[in-house]
Amino acid sequence: MRVLLIEDDRMIGESLEESLRHEGYALDWVADGEAALLALRGEMYDAILLDLGLPRRHGLEVLAQYRDRGGSAPVLIITARDGVADRVRGLDAGADDYLIKPFELEELFARLRAMIRRRSGRGRPQLSHRGLTLDPATHEATFNGQPVALSAREFQLLLALMDPPGVVVSRTALQDKLYGWNHEVESNTVEVYVHSLRRKLGRGFVKNVRGVGYKLANDP
Image (cartoon, rainbow, N blue to C red; front, side, top):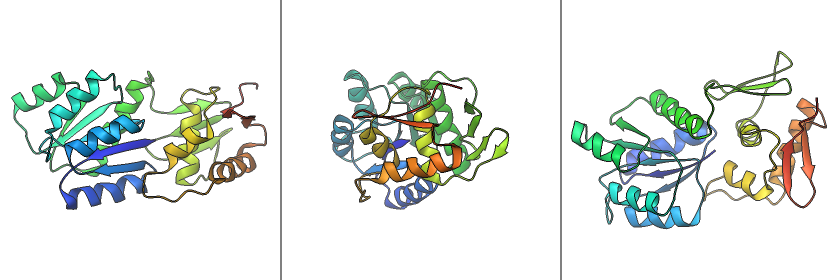
């Protein structure tokens, strides 16, 4: 999953960058409102973490412009402004949730997962397909009832292919969900992870649609 962090506090930004990447998210981080609008024009994100007191453009202005252009990614406002009026303005401007600083990372991760789940129309937190079950909260996976050891990026690749399963996802789109701006990515990175997943789940579990991308097999 690819997340845009919009936060001008360097200490908070560095901490969240490290923590979110450790959770397996591909993260891009910008520190002012103008850079945020530029990033939102050029990239597709699964979720956005938005501070309000930003240089150059206020966070609510960034949010309003993003929604006016049709941007639909879920937005979690993270701010020290804890007044009811502030929360109401943020939610009315198009935010999906609101978290007051300081906060526990576990709560941030849970709210982020819940936003992404709601936006994709899923009621249950776990995803299941052909004997494979993924739990985004614990990063645990089982296949036909047995635990499967997956790396963070293998887990994220499967999440991208399972939401929903059977839909073809291009190699570029998968790569974007695995890596942020600051990572150098080899041209065969996705193929390497697909090969590893086939060894663990069976050769036919992840199918290659030639010239298009990858999908999970629908047949039993």
